[in-house]
Structure formats: C-alpha cells, structure tokens
Length: 186
Image (tube, rainbow, N blue to C red):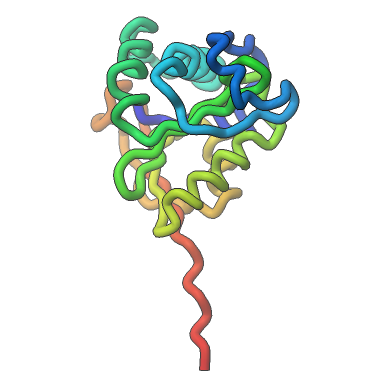
C-alpha cells in the first residue's frame, strides 16, 4: 500500500469524508482546508479518503487488501507510526499525506472532489519543507495523472519495475526529488 495516486490531477468525483466533531477545532473553511498533523481520531476518515481516491484514480489496479484491512492499517500503523498529515475542510478530512523515514513520501491521497484545487500542491510544499534533503516515492505506471503531478513538482524517474516487488503486482515507478544545489559563490 505505497502508491500515491491522488494528486491535483486525480479524477474529480466522490463524496467528502465525514469526520468527528473533534475535527471542528482548527478545521479549515469549506473552501480552504487546513493542513495539520493527523490524530488517532482521524484514522477512519483518512482511510476513507484513501479508499475513495484509490477506487477512482486506479480502477484497473487490483487492491491487495480489503476495505477493513485498509482501515485497520490506518488505525494501527499509518497514523500512529508515521508522520501523517490531513487536510480538513469544514468538518471533513479531504486529503492525507504520509511521510515515512528520512525521505519516503509514502502516501498522498485526496478526496476526488478536491482534484485541481491546489491541495496536492500544498501537500507537496509541506512534504518538501518536512524533508528538505529530498523525497522518494513509488507510483504505478498506469497512474499518468500522478506521474505528471510529481514530474511537475521536480521529481525524476529513477527506476521502473514489473511490479513483482509490490503487493498489487502492478508495474511501478520510483521517483526522487532532490533540492537544487546552491550555486557556488566566488
């Protein structure tokens, strides 16, 4: 579960995730989500964003896990063990960003209705600030919108595989972003 399909170029249909009233504190306006660290109470809504986004962005890719397994993974692994951020609009979680280790952009998923509204760009800016030494990620080869999004944000392809190394058995691409080296001073 490491592909990152939901970007500003992801498909644009789907419902927003309902979240608990606890999310109202510090929540963003309905048209300008607030980005904040995920809390344990966000795990269900973040998983629902992942499920909707994956289903819309990657309809031809076999999911390796059931909906309930994805929810459990968010509840017991993603939110507690990784640097997880959510975008909150009104009282709804509408996006999720997961950073793992020193360089891994592990997940970037948006509710499909938030495509093309700058939220993916904001998450990418946040990821680059949080990992200024560089980022790496995997995405499926069939995910053309995500590939364009990452390339637009300065990521370059470093490896292609036939998919034998991922749970979905789907051909994928490794991307890397390295910050620009400062010009030497004389």
